[in-house]
Image (tube, rainbow, N blue to C red; front, side):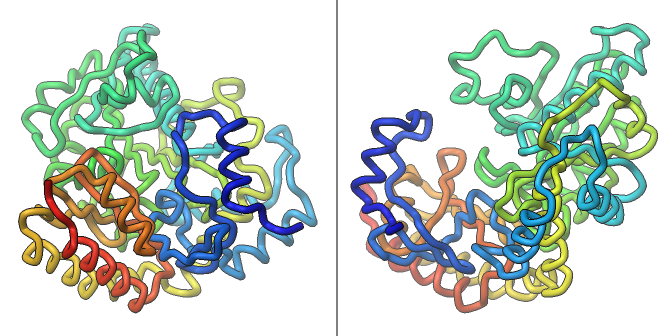
Length: 406
C-alpha cells in the first residue's frame, strides 16, 4: 500500500485525532539512523529523537531483529506469569543500578507514579499512620508527567491549569539552592524528594553535583527517600548511563523510560534495599508493563550500547560538538544567551521565543524541540556520527545568522 500524501494524513488528523498536540506540521513516514523522511520525500536530521526516546536512532538493525524475533515467539502473557526477557532486563538494570528490585511499566509518567506510591508507602512505614508523612519536595520548573500525580509534582501553571484540585502534599524549592531544600524537608512529614538530574521540559537546567551530594545527606539524615527522575537524561544521554553518576550519589529509587526502549514504550523503577520490599502483592500492578516484546526492545538497546560503546562515543564526540555550539553565542550574542546541558542533552538558550526558530530549523532540515519557553533542545541519538553533529551545528549557524530579531 502506497504512503498517503501529506494532505490526506493531515486531513485524517484534522478530522479524527484529538487536538492536544495542536496540528503537527508534517507527516513522517520513514527513518534510518539519525535521519527521517516526510511523506513528500524530504529528509531531516532528527535531533529530537522522539523527545529523547530513539537512543539508537531509527530502525537500528539489531533492535529491529530482536523485536521481530520476539514478536514471532511471544508478545504478551501479563504479569500473572513470568517471561524470560523481563527477568533478563531486571538483572541487567540491577547491574547498572546496584542491588535492588525493578518494577516495570509503560512510560515515564507511570514510572513517576510508581515513585510517588513508593513515597507514600515509605511515609506510612516511617510514621506508622496513613496520611501523616506524605510530603514530597520537588524542584521549581520540574516536569514529572501529565497524570494526576505527575501534574501535582510539576509546579508549572501551564501543566496544572484546568485540572485542579490536584494531589496534596507537594512543595517546591529552587533547583541548586540547598538552603531552601533544607528548610522544605521536614523529618516528620516529608516522605520523599523527587528530582530530575537535568530538567528537560523546564529548559535544560542541570542539578549541580555538590547540590545533589548535600541533598542526599539531608535525605539520609531525615529518613527521606531520594527519588531521581532520569526519564529524559538517563540511558547514556549525558555520557554516563545515569546523569546523577556525575555527582557520585546513590538514589533510593530511579525512574527511567524514553531511551530505555529505543522507541518501544517501556518504563522502569529501580528501588534500593530495603525500600524494594515496600511493594508487596496487590500494592501495585500493570497489565502491559515489562511485557516480553517491550523487554526485548530494551535489552536490544542495552546490547547495542555495550557492543558499539555508545557512551564512550558520546564522550569522545562531545567536545568538538559543544565547541561548535558555543561558537553560536559569540556569533549571535543578541539571540543566543548560552549553551546549557550535558552530553547529548543540550539547550540552546535564546533571548526570543524558541518556537519560530524550531519551525525555521525544520524547514532547513533539522528537527529540534522547544523547552521552557527559552530553549531549543538538541537530543541526538547516541549513534549520531561526528559528521551529523557537525551538520546540526552548521544548520543552526546558518538559520541563526539569518534570523532577524524583532
